[in-house]
Structures are given as C-alpha cells and as structure tokens.
Figure 1 (cartoon, protein in one colour):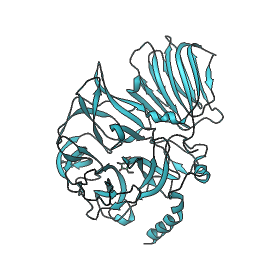
Figure 2 (cartoon, helix red, strand yellow):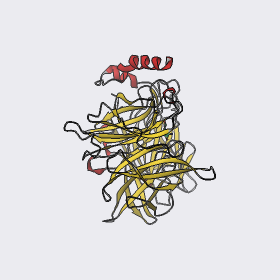
Figure 3 (cartoon, protein in one colour):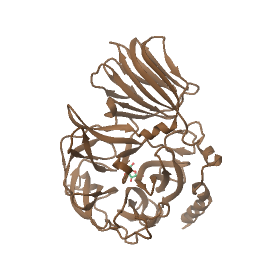
Figure 4 (tube, helix red, strand yellow):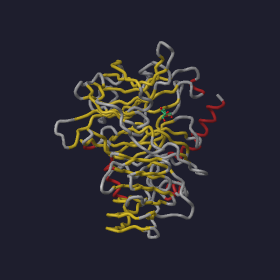
Amino acid sequence: MKRSLWTLLLTLLLAPAYGHEAKSSATNSAYDQPLRPQFHFTARTGWLNDPNGLVFYQGEYHLFFQHNPFGTQWGNMTWGHAISKDMVHWQQISNALFPDSLGDMFSGSAVVDWHNDSGFKSGSNSPMVIFYTAAGGQGEKSKGKKFTQCLAYSTDGRNFQKFEGNPIIANRGGGDRDPKVFWHQASHHWIMVLFVDEARADKKRVNTVQFFSSTDLKEWHFESKLDDYFECPDFFELPVAGKPNLKKWTLFAADGNYTLGEFDGHEFKADGPKHRGDFGPNFYAAQTYSDTPDNRRILVGWMRGGKYPNMPFNQQMAFPCELTLTNTLNGVVLVKAPVTEIRRIYTDEFKWKNVNLKEGKSISSTNRIADIDVELDPEAGSIVKLVCNGEPITLDSNGRLGCKGATITLKPASSHRLRVLVDVTSIEIYAENGRSVLSACYLPAEGQYGISLSALGTAHLKQMTIHGLASIWE
Ligand code: FRU
C-alpha cells in the first residue's frame, strides 16, 4: 500500500515530463548530454529495453518500449511510448501501459483491426489492438500471479484501455511471453506467435514458440509449436526479389537468427537451418512494424548492453532498417538496409574516389555522427582501419571485418562495400549488400571525435562518401 502510494505520487510528479509536449528548447535540452545518441531513439529518462507494439496507425509510427520510468536499471516494466512521422524523428509522449494486479507490462505487439473483428471500434476509427504479457509476480501488485497474455486497445493512439476480459491466454508453461499478432490473409485468421518455456514430462524446460489462431482477437486456439526459439518471436511473409510469385515466411526470436519456410495458417515448416541475424554484440529483441504504408517490413532492434555512465537514461534502439528477401547462389536470404528516410537528416557530404591508402596516409572528416558508404580492397597482408570517434572498425585482406571484438568473415570479392552508421555510442555496419550486419555499442574516446580511414600496409579505396547527420532532437 505504502509503495503504491509512493508510485502514484511519483507518477503525478513526473507526469509533465512525459506529457504531450510540443517541440521546444526545454524538451531538446533533455537530449544534449555527452553520451546521448543523436539519431537513435532513447528514453528521455530511465531504462529502456525491447521495442513493443510497433504499428503504423493514423499517420504515425508508434514505438512503444519496455521502460522503467523510475530508474536507469531494468524494473517496473511499463510501456513507454513515442511517435514519429518518418521513423527518424521521435517524440516521446505519455506512457501507455502501467503495471497492474495481473502483472508488470512485458513485451508484445500491436495491429490495426481494420474490420473491427474485436468489436472495440468506437466512432470512425478502426481500433489499434495491443497484445502484451502481464508478468504476474514481477511487481507488488501481482504477487502470486503467473505470466499471462493480455489485450488493450485504443481508437486515438493516445489513450489505452485494457480489456476487461483479460487475460486472454492463461499460463501454459512458466514465463510465457511476448505475443506477436498479425492477420493471415490466406486462412482468414489472426495468428499469434508466443514464446512458451514449456515443462516437459521429464521436468526439462524447452524453449518453444507456439502458434494460435483467432477470429475476434480475444479468443485464441492452439495450432502448433516449434522447439528452440526463445523470447520475442516475430513472423512475417515477404516476396523474394527477382523471383515472381515466390514468397517466404521468416521466423526469428530475440537473438535475431532467422529461419525461412512455409506457413499454411496452422504450422510453420522450415526450409533449412537458421541463418545468423546480426554478428555484433548489441542487437536483441527486434520486432517489425505492422500495417506500414506500401507493406514495407521495417525492423527495430534493441541495442542491448551499451553503457551510458552518469546519463539520466539507459540503453538505445537500433536505427530502423527495411527487410527484403533476395535470391542468392546459396538460396534465399534476408537483406537489411537502414530506412531511406535517414536522408532527411543528411547535412554535409564528403566524397573520395580511387585513393591508394598507405601507412601514414589517412583520410578524415570531423563528423561525429555520420552515414558512411565505403568500398575497399585491402592488399594481401594489409588491414584497413576506419576509426569512428576513437573506435576502430577493421577489414583485412582475408575479408575479416571486425568491430568491438565481433567478426564477420565476408565472402571473397574484388572489393568490399560497407555502409556504416555512426552515432555517439553506436556503430552499425551493413556488409555484403545488407546480408550481414554487425551492431555494436561503444564509448567514444574523449577528444578523439571524427572519422578517419587509414591502412596498415596498403589498400585501394574505390570510393567513400560520408554524409554528416543532424541530431534528430534539434
Ligand atoms: C526480452 C525480454 C522479454 C520480456 C521483456 C521484459 O528482452 O526478456 O522477453 O517481455 O524483456 O522486459
């Protein structure tokens, strides 16, 4: 009782900071700390983890997120909320879902219920329907309760109503969580993919994803399950570029490693083994947007594990990227590209062509945050170093690409083209035309701002373009 009174008081005191503010210098000053990412989303204050409920609704991209409004460490799981018109500039608004007697608000997804299957429509707007896990037993209010799946809805994208019939799915195993819901056109059902850590007969716990179907979003029927997928599943179908009439389903969980296959509305059948999703140390719990214009499949990950000493916030999201499928000699693979809207924050541009890099000769720019496109060919035995705010990215003549202790061995090629997004505390490297990505967080070396390219040995720089970026908070 005492604790909930304090929580209420604190919520009231903090309310203005989380309100619907217009952009103002007062708001922006909240984003000007030395370790504040300048084009990656962070909570204004407090802890952030998984992206939740990614949905395009009434002209806005909604980014809900796992949030601790009361501290910079994980806890008090609440759905934070931000909106954007372009997935680049974000405005954090009032928190959307708060812990209740069923549990703390763990991860989930959102859809637009275009045909009002749920019956939550009021006025002329189709409802946004949100699925989340009530993590029973995680907070004082839900002591003794188990993890269950719940529903909330909104008809304005600002006010959220929890369904009085919650929970919609009872506990099935233990820490069941992270419902991902989408409309499956071919079977005319809504489908939910849920992580369930199932207890088997021998008491062994097995990480499974389980598929459910529904016609009204409230009542769900078990369809099938698959072993060896952990929390935060996502599942969607995409056309294969260059192969008319060929589509594939992609299934992944929090580690981002993905499987391609077929789905008939009941069961997923994998074509082959999992592919690596991200090679870096800081990419986790990614989710894709629902209901995007032009059916773009946009992914946002959590850059888990970065350090932000003495900052009022903790953790950041990855920059949104668009997913497509392409056919290669080794079969169909997933391709990622930063959303093209990044061009909206391009500032200055520097270009180089056909430069022979040697020891002692480097190329540099003073940009602290940048979008770099570079094509390199290190000569035998040489290593190219691209240093961003003191943090090195290396590429050797055997195609080994490294950053923050992680490595991608690139397929042999006459040259390697990399796209590198550099923010104050993160580096995202897109290699092999987006087939291999390495996401890493770093702490900038004080006083070593800017970008420089050099070689240990010799290397040919075919071309490099550096676009400086503007802060999204300005
Ligand atoms: C993944 C995760 C989810 C859970 C949430 C809790 O990072 O563990 O499975 O819903 O975080 O914050």
